[in-house]
Image 1 (cartoon, rainbow, N blue to C red):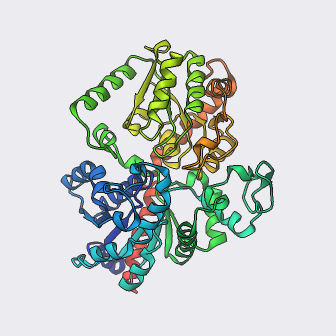
Image 2 (image 1 turned 60 degrees about the vertical axis):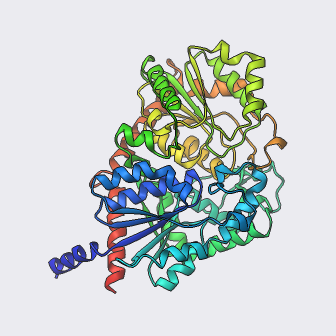
Image 3 (image 1 turned 120 degrees about the vertical axis):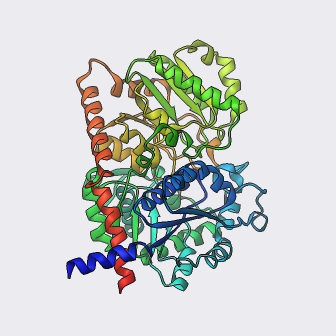
Length: 504
């Protein structure tokens, strides 16, 4: 009987067709494309549905995957720019000319069902057998019901975050507290304390009717899904995986860190890379040569994410803290920062000239996964976005945490309190997108220097323990996606679960 079941499973495997629909933002798009590639390497047919602009960002990696023999395709759907009052070409959150258009983007997401359904009507050979979608695209639930196929949400965060969110939604323990009053999140395996000012915006901000509707639909969609795929691994947060399963009764497959699907330097360089010219490619080569000139584990890498807008005055304090360490650093200023104001402050202060040689300030996009894997990088000062957190951990780097918004204060707790592989700069208030000018300077240069020294100090025993723990978690992360590892096995279980659904 077992051999017959195995034979049936093998036959069904060739009939599997997973459709993946990522959210239109780099931090959501890239990990789902990584997941698509992992599934395709298991002989599963995979279709990614996204807009033309987002497809262009991942085309190089997808093409290489196809050349290697994977069955993976990309289908485009139309983004309703005009209907939502968005300029043409704004198909991703990071392409918005102003965060004042966030509500328009939310409206566009609420209008996506019809364009996506039109693409599904063309997928007939083989018909979709499973739909995986970003949890913030809840309209996919209606499409999956029509198709009568299992629907799985993809969550680009951790089980720690999922459990925190679930507890806060159910308990509303924060509801009547002041912004600065600490409280304990109930029902967690550890004593975790937050302030209301550190919670994600979905608990504290009223963004309007479209956002409220999207939030409630998202909750319902998660509850009714067949299960959830999480970009994490069980050795990393085993207690939280078990507790989330117990509390919700949901199927949970931890299959990360999915960024480790990018094995060689070309994969790492091209991951999410926008179109570039020869000058930009030459600059990339120069800063990699610059890294080659430094000893192992000596350089601080600094990047506060793709979508985070930080007041220029706060960025200057960060830069002055980097200068005070006397250590080499790479500091990435993404396009979303107020470039002109920041450049003016840098010029007036003279910081960039003073650190010339040991400090490299890069404006724009960089291949972060490639840089973090360079032997010269010794620590990562991060906004604690979950992708960046996992990328740092996968490379054995101690993390200096500067959370800004969303789930980032959650992730700081994981880094500093649960895993003990990092140090805080001391941010206390979430800086919500579109409201950055209200916050000013939260973290002074002295705190930046202090946190860096806490993880990079050469003669400090606690610093060495932090670095050792970081190296140990990197080993676990890299083993988990290898054959026999927990994430490898979870991906196998996911595929088997869908085969079982087909047999029923």
